[in-house]
Image: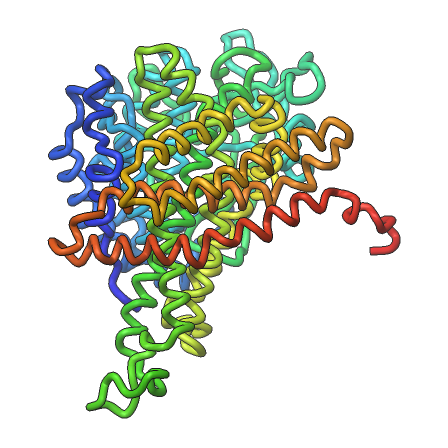
Length: 592
């Protein structure tokens, strides 16, 4: 398997040449004195060294060994504690954290690149700091000043970790029916009792404390999601002076044995009257939790991209070295018994598909991250609101489409290896297994599709969609004629998506089943169109520079492949949407 190398050249291209993010930072006073192009490049360079040098070598051994559980104690694979310490000491856990509590204060668009690198190196490893960052985000935005001061500094530095405790055995997507209870105490704290499952990093040996954010219900809480509150529940109690006290009344009952991400501890957590502290308002726990959901769901999309990138790096090295058969047009490597398999049309199809989806996904995830930064930091109310609505619209697309494309990409990478791709020692089958969870957790991709179609499209009357469609149309209208090979099919794709959106909005008025029936294929059509916009932007940035650097020639060639071979998938997806919901309800339950 190829050694992982962070794709820094492409990251710099996306940030500096496609989106010119330094201009955005200059317009946002909170970021203007914090980050510039030189600072960002230095951060990414160092992150590339740490992830490739300290974390990537642990990916396969971590998968082989996995985590172990013994009487409530969870041990991560060999090398993980040391690598985590190196990662934390570099400040990477708090790369996007608030500076007033010890974070680095970088914008999300920089954090997104760091996330890609660490997850390409090892998704199992990357999950530990990711969950900590998510917990920090909810604490920062909703907890009291005392709780922030007491917990955030040690979490940002990686001395303590975090977890998010939502799911219960009977309550996954439908959190309104959770049973975990919170009993108010005279001192203002709460006693938390209940069982949570699928808790990433619920217990491990990487840090001296783990800060759990737990959804629970007070005794008098109203039924459903309006009765959920959020609590901070430390594994080890923290004294007033910041030192650690007694262990809290909670423990890990077991860990799951999984298809992939085996070095990530996925825990059953039991809370037996554990002491917790309210975050935010009573019965407003979901609002506090959803503060971090847009960040986390984008983060899961980036996880998919990360695995696709690692698979591509392995596959391209193998395709250049593995010799089998001759090229259709005759021998290429005449001094060898056969040609490298990269000469064969089908291998090139798979490699170009991987490359186009990875690079399109990197641009799209960076674009969404920029909207998060604008929504958070812009001092212009209208600009911030537009960005917030774009984030709401694009987050389910980023989570679902990036991870769906990632599975396709990792399978292509495995396929290029042929029989070797099915063998563990080559590493490609692990990436397929690890990738599969990204389509499931943080809200399954079916739920993401329903969120896009039901809440963001129908729920807004199409207004959120209009922001994005109008931006693309404005780009097409302003583009130079030399870009027409990209802008013409992009304009046609947006027109098709306009029609599809209008069709669903109209059909849903008479039959609510149409929303769910259209949702998955609609999100896919949306995703391919969004990637087409990204590829047109990248083509514009690369155009005219082909003679300077092969990188730009490669970029333009990949853009042409995307428009010729991948964007046309929208036509079959559109036909499926317009087929309607009727065929889904032709069978009674007993007839399946």
